[in-house]
Length: 395
Image (cartoon, rainbow, N blue to C red; front, top):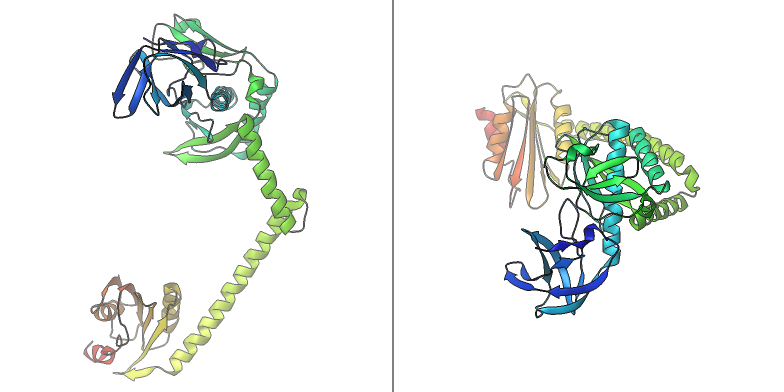
C-alpha cells in the first residue's frame, strides 16, 4: 500500500523516494514507493511528472492500493532524491480548485449540477453541465462571482469525514465510509481526492474561453492562473493587431466590425444581383444558338470547371423558354458535372436525358421530368453530346 502524502501536503515538491518494488508491463518500467507526493491520474485530474534519481517520471497511476510511478528508464531498488515538476503541479492545482469554484457558482447561481470535468494545467480544462446552452449574460454572471470568490482569498480546507451525511455536500457522494472533503470556506463542500491550492487567491484568475454543446449538454472550457493571463494576453494582441489593420482603436473595434459586416452583406447582395444579370445575358446568348430537333429546341454546352450550382441556375432559366431542352456540362479534367432541363411542352424527360448522357462515365445522378443533375469521374468528355440529337429523336 502506498501512503498518499499529497493529500495532506500538496505544496511539497522534493522528498526522498524509497523504492521498495518494481514492475514491468506493457506501459513500461514502474516503481513502487511506501509513500509518495506524486499525484496519480484520477478524479478528472492529470498526473504529476518529475524525476526520481536520474529517471524521468512520465506517468503516475493507481493500481489497487499501490501507486505506480512509470519511469523513462530502469533504476535499482533504493533511495533516490525525487522532485515533482512544480509548474505542472501548481497549474493542475489552480485548475482543479478553479473547477470547484466554477461548479459551486453554477450550482448556486443557476441551479446547474456538474456532470463531469477534466482538469489539465497544460490545456483548457472543461466542465459539463445539464443544460443545452448558456447565454452571454449567464457566463458573465458566473465569471464575476467565481473571480469574486478568488479575490476573497478564502481558505480551501482538505479533511476526511466518516459519514457523508455530516457534511452539506453540493453533490452527495454515492459511497459510504471515509470520504475526503474539499471545503471552500463558508461556500462549498465537495468530495474530492485531488490536489488543491490552500487559498482561493492562489487560483489567480478564472476565465471561460468558450462553450460547446456535447450530447445535448453544455461544456465550458476554462483557464486559470498563468494560463488565464496568457489567454487574455493573446486576445489583447489579436485585438490590437486587428484594430491596427482597420486603423481604429481597440475600443472602436466592435463598432467597426459591425459596420464592415453590414457593408460586406450589402456587397454580397449586389454581387449576387450582378451574377444573376450575367447569367441572364449568358442564357440569352445560348437561346440564340439553340438547335431545332423534332419540334423542340436544344441547347448543349460544355464548360471548363464551372460551378454546378450555376449550371443548375442556367438550366432552370432556360426551361422557361417554350419547347426548350437543355444539357449543360462542366469538366475540370477529372470530374464531370451535368445538368439537364426540359420545358413543360416537350415530350422529353430531363432525368431520362441525364441517365443517357451519364451512362458512358463512372457517374450517377437523378431528378424528375423537369430538371435533373449528376456527375462523377471521367477521362474524356469531348464527345459527350455526340448522340444527343439521336436521343432526342428517339425520346
